[in-house]
Image (cartoon, rainbow, N blue to C red; front, side):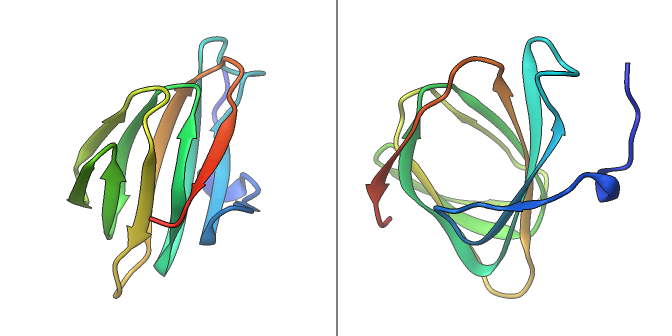
Length: 119
């Protein structure tokens, strides 16, 4: 068991992203089956179109963004829940005005990210 403040967890810049940071709130050393990550994208920031070999379950904490999942383009905002199947191309673009922030839960399995290009 562990309890900590999210503000005390170091944030790392996401190399493939634009104005995006990530915190690993619960990693494989604490949770045997799933990792919980927090992403924050500054207005206009985001992630290019890419795939992962693991599924993603996400909960939007703050802000708004346009996201692509497969062939669909969607608007998401605070309180929305997003599921991205393993291997599905996806991308993010934060709207102007405030940061876009979400929790992302993924299985603790080997994950390969493949960048497919701009969204």
